[in-house]
Length: 259
Length: 295
Ligand SMILES: Nc1ncnc2c1ncn2[C@@H]1O[C@H](COP(=O)(O)OP(=O)(O)OP(=O)(O)O)[C@@H](O)[C@H]1O
Ligand SMILES: [Mg+2]
Image (cartoon, rainbow over all chains, first blue to last red):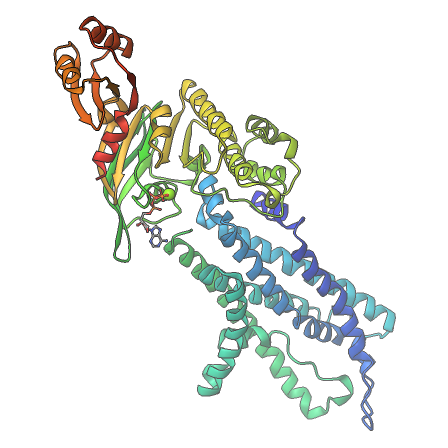
């Protein structure tokens, strides 16, 4: 297993696109997060800098970082499609990998990406939190990091399945973005109690839109409690979707010729 | 265990195109097996199936008497159709990945790069290589880990004459070490010069197979010319060990029995009072046999 991951990083380290996308993530997440705290709305007495306080910061920073998860999904699309356009997937199998090895390699790669992003958010969040000097609990909502991790894995897994199915980079990226749009459209056509279980909806719900501290009223506390319980269910469903995506990606790979 | 590869009735279609029709073949240890056929006859399809990148519609195959697995493929050096590498990685980085997949020592990288004459360019990116250099790198990758079995699809594709003869030497050297080589080619000359056995494919059908001598009756065809062609033909028919006499324009073509040379022919004609104005080897009969086969 570690051997497979080692091979993946041998391909990645010299690959500039990989550095560019991670560079964008590393650079812009704290900047956007900082920027969001500086928002001031005329005649609206809310101090957005409270978003840097523990424990809310974990919900806030993962929400901001989740915008970049599409980027991570696209990175996976590019990396997997490269294996088909360079015909290196074909060559690896000829040389002695199995098709399962190919999928496992990509799963390990995605997991390592999600882990890197999560650790980065943990560090950035801690820094913001300590500097802002609030005295809330550090750990109370730290589970948002786990949820974010699963979300990142979710978007990348959608990328994997589309790339394995379509194999051409340009078309796959279009399909990746289109599948999100298409799902939104289809969701408007089906009743909400079905629509809420659609994969993209489930995955995007993992990082719920935070409510600014000053806006929370007593009656809202109740719905927030409910939302947090719903989050656990969402997490479970998301994990099931992700496992299913991996299985289907493997199935597609075994059924199609590898050119 | 003498059988390296056993193919049992594999077929494959692409839509209406029947790329392979019920192909069965057995390849033994130490054989240099040529798979010969014109463009589109199913050579690459065959190799793609036995290397598990193409799915056959029916039939089965075994490596070393076992169902195919990644472990058997690790012990086979393969080049299928094109050199496949990461364009942005150097030759050395690319081969180092192959090392990890095949689970062989990193020391192999420099050894194989030297064998194919790329050691001076080992750190150049693959995308900066010329066509022939890419092909050489693919050969280098095949040699990784000194495998007992090699599968080569058009190994001399894109190489200059020197490159072709170098690769041929490499293959013949491997053959003397007792390795088994399966080689697809549409170039008769290449098969003739390197292979011990041959299977001839045409439109997905196996036309014939066996030791190369038996299949393609490897005999040279000569031609002679002189002032009086009729007298020449008459005289030729009276000389021992000559067959297939056939006149085309001002030349008479013929075949000599085993062990007889053009010097023998020349002397025999001279003894019967015929002065030869021209004598030479026309073309190997192999080629006409091959063309006859795939007609
Ligand atoms: N991906 C594909 N889709 C459709 N048809 C294909 C595909 N690959 C091969 N074929 C068809 O299968 C037949 C056999 O092709 P194959 O590549 O095995 O030939 P080949 O003997 O290797 O030829 P060449 O000497 O040109 O390399 C051809 O008719 C070809 O058109
Ligand atoms: Mg071919």
